[in-house]
Image (cartoon, rainbow, N blue to C red; front, side, top):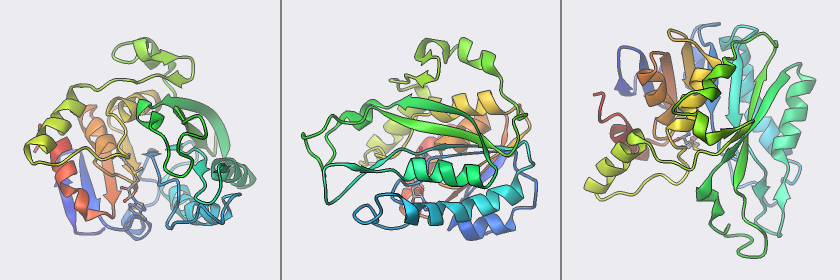
Length: 259
Ligand SMILES: C[S@@+](CC[C@H](N)C(=O)[O-])C[C@H]1O[C@@H](n2cnc3c(N)ncnc32)[C@H](O)[C@@H]1O
């Protein structure tokens, strides 16, 4: 495994590197659940040409080759993915639909789609400005090769989640103490929060819904480490991989209560 370790705890490691290569060092069948938010544009600025998301599908499929090796058949992947605003027209590409269709053709099953209400998205998008209603939700797709993976529905009925959850709508318009700790640390360093970060409660909910303590979670697009930090405090083993080392201060901020 890559030796460039950002954070290490008794339960997990945050690694710097390209996850396609770093995942090759993780043993077969050693991950229970993948929880991630990939960049909607894949590996390049592909929004102008890729209305069907074909290049996105080719890019993300390579990660699923690895997920298939790392997960047991009942292993689950929960990934956030919506349509991408085009750069050259007032509309969107459908890479999320194309990718779901592709996964089904590979015999993955859709367990459920969740809709994550994200007030940060309400800002006008640069490419369409004020000419389209802004997005307010992104879908989180829960997929597996088997329908029998762990799914603890009662988690949605208890605190801290119950007040924010309406069926499959996750109305997490909140900033919890872990988000506040992250923001405070960055403010003291004169930096601002990472725009693409999800609030701690999103991965925490997915982790409690889809895993039990002691299981192992992988986030191959780890960003600030919000998934890793939530896994750590919820007693799950975890591996985070992120290629953009300029986020190191953000990861320190996220883990400032741990290391
Ligand atoms: C939407 S952000 C994830 C944010 C994260 N969920 C959080 O809460 O901070 C996607 C991240 O994936 C990273 N990324 C993209 N391609 C990658 C790759 N091949 N290997 C590792 N990280 C990658 C990007 O640098 C970016 O930080």
